[in-house]
Length: 218
Image (cartoon, rainbow, N blue to C red; front, top):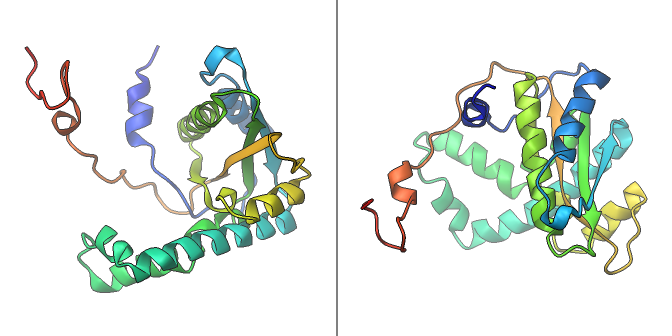
């Protein structure tokens, strides 16, 4: 069996796609990966809604744009967005990236992705949000292993009334305590050559041994 770490460490979020559709055989492999995610008490609360209809995807993209734009505009007003991207040295590129955030464009990906998978689940299980996140990660890794690009988009599933609109658009019951939407995943063939993911923090900065603060292994 190959080392899954090779797939994990080379995956990155892909937001721009070619218009070509994804063959069903690959799409079902991605969905199957989600089905095999770890789940508390084996509850398997997930529901995967595959959306290819352009009009529906456009509407979902618009909901994501509004949600993310509202949040990031507030972040920009408080100076947090500027701090977040202070490391981008080129001022033109830094302004472009921040504009994508506070305009909400960064969450409008559904409009141009050939297919999105909305990940929802029943809320009678205590671990539902964690289980859904595990399923999302599984699908992203499988997509990458198949040569596809994908990105996790929380935008329209934010904690506002737009979540109700999102549910209504997909025919998901909107009653309290019925179904939770975690996010959607956009998939497609990468438009550009895949670049290496951005660097991660060194492992030694993250690991503590036996107790918090103990950075030396005995």
